[in-house]
Image 1 (cartoon, rainbow, N blue to C red):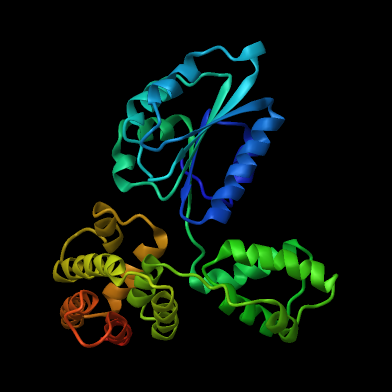
Image 2 (spheres, rainbow, N blue to C red):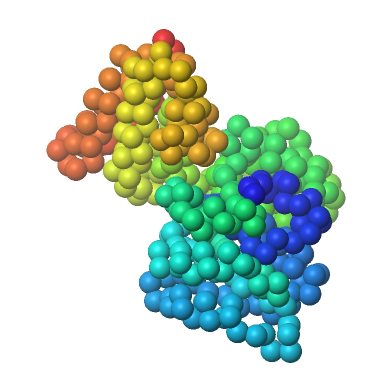
Length: 335
């Protein structure tokens, strides 16, 4: 089965599954989900832990041997396997065998970056869905970040003024780990007092962090001011624009395909899922863009992608970031 991080505690209280998969690119939220599973497993007597890293050097036969071996003194064990690329590779056959009949004295915790879409069509994943739990972890949407901060602050007994919350959100956006650390620090500094704008201005540095995927989502959502800020941060950090350009070009062509076939029977949501768009935030952005932009806008945006590509490769006097700002304005229009 599949569940979200918010439902995981309740699910764990009902009992443990033999295997868990936690996947996503937000380290703080992935770590918190894994810690909840570890804690529940320890309470159930699974104390011994063995960890594997599924890099190119891993011998998956060794992993299989561990599942076949009897644990010393019949101790229950947790076996954690980290998947740094979101792919299993040679481990598929081993996991399929394990998942067909999971051992009763072992709990498996798979920890992955965002799971490669092709893996979800494999036999091992279908077995996991049948016998275990997948917890996909998505980044916090930009428009929900203030609410996330406020909830976390409340959990720590902190009270923030509206202005303090706005400054915190601006300075920490996209960096949940830094946000959590800053809230811990503010709890120590303020000793239970209300946190105002002046306190945040003095105590919290700008640690906002973005990536190319998030910028593409903002561009497609038509949020030009926020996209402009992200472009500035990514340019300053030395981000390679060609990576995000590939994502943007792919999504613009998806939108053109969606717009030119508007008479088809399937819904936009079904169309996007067929083409591998499963992340809720990205799917929402694409559906909103499809409603807001007409084919002429999209064709113009595709042409602008060619200019960005030329600029990124040094064939244009202007910076690719200049054209990305033009893209931001173009995609913010309403047809």
